Length: 446
Image (cartoon, rainbow, N blue to C red):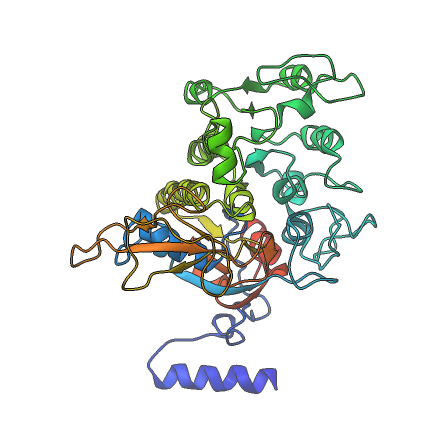
């Protein structure tokens, strides 16, 4: 049946005047080609995997209103390859960040409590390799890097370089990640690199083994930076960089009302923001002259969504969109880099309500008529947001309505641009496919 289908596709293309070979025809809709025996494999490439955690299509649609306006387009909209992401686990329909990250890194379904394993049980990657795609890439001589606006040890990125019984074993995860010797580690989490009793730039260490991983990193040849300004002044000669921009996360994820009470901004002012970290990581990884894998997570989209903080969510997704623009610009210059963008869940279930009679000057009720919590520009009980102008110049008010306080399956999309993007990212896209796409590009396989 497969051969019959292939021949049928070839005949249809031939009738349309398109030259075909066995290697150019694949199974419809799954993005995986069928290559003829002896065909030349694709050249290996680089991948920038951007992971705005918790960002469903509904969150991106809402963010468009304040980033580009209802008729405008964001960088996210410019990604030509689109697939419907399916994110279930082996024991739940909605993903946890640690299990979702593990599936991305290994390409196999795992249970909810997994972190680089299957609920503590060792696993092999879908290829049979005894490690993650990032560990395999490192072993193959590629440069590797991690970025996270939370701690670098956070679940969506830590799973690519570490395995632990619990996602909360932060100090052990930090040790494993540094021992893996990535060229780039940028994010929060300084406390997990320092011993208890030792004060760092952002607070006291939490390690109980007495090991100072920051000093160890320096002996390993890492340039260590602690602020956005220091990252901006990174010397061009730096080939290994450890950036730790906060004791834990670089943001203050809490409801708007609590932020006002504590006088806290959404993001900590000393910390490098996600777009700056992504740009710096690409600069360092690309100057090695080798192909590379960068996994970069904006965790603020997930954490602010989980706190039902609409304004914080918009600020985080604005940074994620800026990072997409930076990555796409590099991919276009390079010619052999894919930019892949996907979340593992839809956190908070953000949606937009905008009735014709919504008054932009009046505070919104705490809940909509269906009982769902809703946010205005300053949180609960504040006036609605006002979108940027549409093509007619109108600025229309809207409320943000929340479906949950945690991860939901949601309408998540995988999107991509650059090298092999439209070949590999299309149709229906299971979360295990992230691994397959990363490996196909990095290792030059079909």
